[in-house]
Amino acid sequence: MTLFVLDNSITMRWFFDRGAHAHADAILADLESFASQAVVPILWRYETSAVLAREQNRATLPAQEVDVFMNSLAALPITLDKESGHRIYPDVHRLAVTYRLTSYDAAYLELALRRGLPLATLDAELITACGRAGVAVL
Image 1 (tube, rainbow, N blue to C red):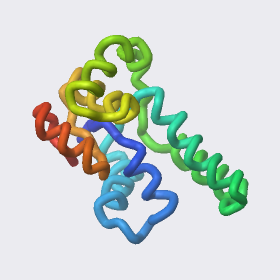
Image 2: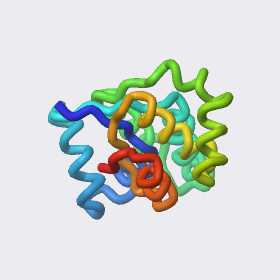
Image 3: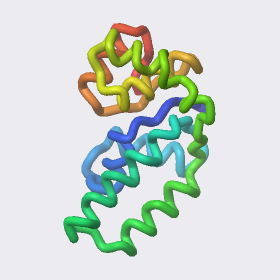
């Protein structure tokens, strides 16, 4: 079983581009088959909710579709890293400054570094930071 850190850039592809992004879809298939397991910082839930709420508020997404998607996420082997909230000061902040990332992106990098895990992301700046920090990217 592969254990990795899951970034929200992959998660949102599952909702908005399912079937159109082979890499994101392959990660989802591995999670759905329980061949892989993901770990996420607590921030991941806020980010997922924020993107979906923004689109619902714009009336571009029906609530029922969002509910189905959130329920499908809850059924996947995705574990919240409960320590991530305690790492914002100074670890996440330091990584954000060092690698010129948002603190949001640095939260995923911090988790990958601390746990020694690869990071699944589509974010170009985060991919660059992973390369500089020695974190494998899925």
